[in-house]
Amino acid sequence: MTSDVTSSKPPAAPGDAGDAAVRVPSIDLGPGFAASAFAPGRYAVAIQLSRRGTHARNRVKESSTMSLVLELAGDGTATACRGWDYAFTNDGPTVQSEDRFREQLGFRGRYQVRDGVAEAELAVDNAVCPAIAEYTKGTPRRQSTMKLRCVVATPRAGSAAGPALLCDWQDANTPEVDALRIRDAAPPPWLLLGGGNGLRIKVTGALPKLIGEPVRVTVEDAPARIEADAWQHPF
Image (cartoon, rainbow, N blue to C red; front, top):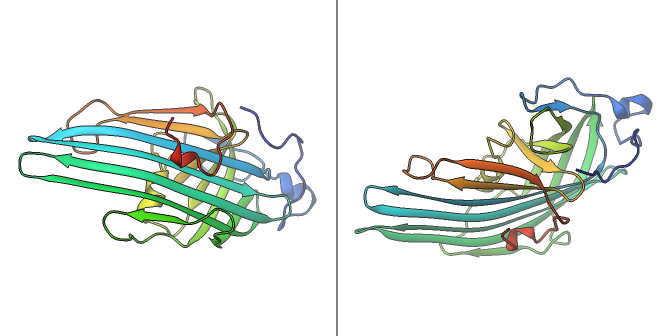
């Protein structure tokens, strides 16, 4: 996987000076990743879930496409765009229900690098990408701020992904944040994004606590650059 940053020694980011900008953080990222020196750049992920299962005589299906594009620029500015297209159906002899929504939200703020870790704070900014909020069951609560703690990481032998960015969206437990945390792609509480074109994560199999196919998670380099509207284009 290629990275947007070609220099082996990235420029000093706000909060660092000189060699501190290339400091490797002392942080445990689990068995799949090793921390690397921070590098500003554009990081992105697209996540597609196609899950189904049965419970008694009910058939349950969930389809979801999400994307998150995060740019941590060399001057300390940060922007992000998050989108989500979701559909859920529960079909049975006595229960027929469905839930569908489409949403998009942009964010803007700044970050600093401390001990090799990028700490960012962003707030909603519709100029980054237009707000979309289409719901069939009322308007759910969503995060209006992003408080991120991000570490550039190198996959250890056997990992599916190339150079990556792991981010902890702190103090946030709303559904859209939880949906970005794919346990088999990165250990909790980290979100996994990729440099270059970004990463694609696909999840198939049974929904939790339902009968169905085994859960399978695949992580791959995106064949083309992941844009802010990737959530509208299933892959």
